[in-house]
Length: 332
Image (cartoon, rainbow, N blue to C red; front, side, top):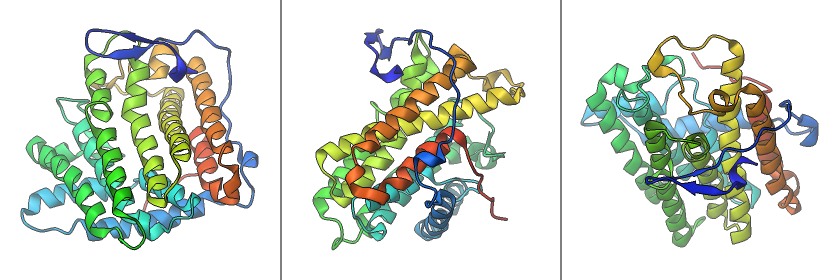
């Protein structure tokens, strides 16, 4: 398993050692391992609709208008799957929490996620002119406005949690833990560290980059849902390991699917130089990594079996990340 390897240190940061070669495996979406009765697409789509409405209300256009328009452009972008907020709600409901208690944090997670993508696309970072098939934020509004929009979304997320979470459903002590968890995930030891190594490079950097850039948001989303509902410390740790595995799994499968289309981007700047398992180890090894991550995520959920069918959404997320068994209709 990639993330259980020994750690070696460079002058700047620690990287996991590259894992040894493994045998060929395939990625399967094992719907039968979850439940034929649970319809993830219906569950997910319904939550997207609710979350979109709340995000629209959370970011009204006001002065300075251009900043808010840039914020709304990325947060309310068509085609967004809302994976972080949906995972947060599902984790909250797993432990008996009310989704009304989770929605403010769910919206905050999407704001933080959008902010990270805005900054990630900047010319000084990944230099990506598009996002989800549309012009990226800096392409539409300019680099200066994109930076301001991202900077504004981070604190807006925190403020939204504090001002909109029903105090009769979530004690303040839990909210403090949620805010601390999000701050940790996006900070200098979390997603920011992943972006640094994404730019800096280095031997075996792919493991660190994948875990920090993609695993952090997954684990933060799952953990926040558990914290809101009052999950125990042991349950929080299970959610942490589960979310991290699912977050990395989703990106690894994205890279595999992109490689199999055999239509790589022509722009040299947009090529992933040593930043994905596919580019470093090849498709075969990346598929093995994906299967291991899927198994790890489900193993963590097996320890939550006492919650019965409430755990099914989280199991289904794993299968979706691995197999992409359905697509979402993009609203017109």
